[in-house]
Length: 92
Image 1 (tube, helix red, strand yellow):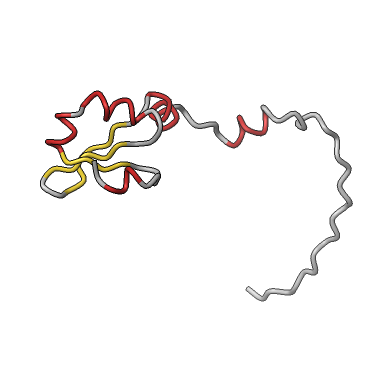
Image 2 (cartoon, helix red, strand yellow):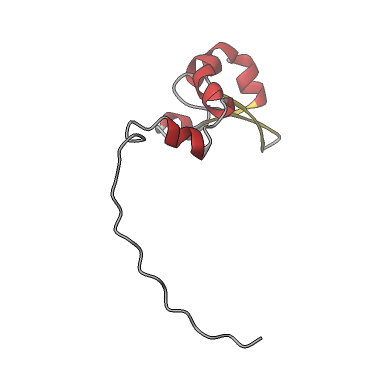
């Protein structure tokens, strides 16, 4: 395993051959943080925990859905009246 994985950074890096030889360790480590697999020195794949994967692929809330789910949606606020903006003459 790469030194980065031992120092507590957010991801661990494995060479493909090493990852294949220690596959069960790679999978177990993915529960704590993503595991990056490199082939010939190039980062090629990432192994994530199922929880991290589901966070990435779950549908995102629209702004409208966010507002509708707000506990403050029924709050009646009185806003001060807006002053009319100064209008300027425009010649056409």
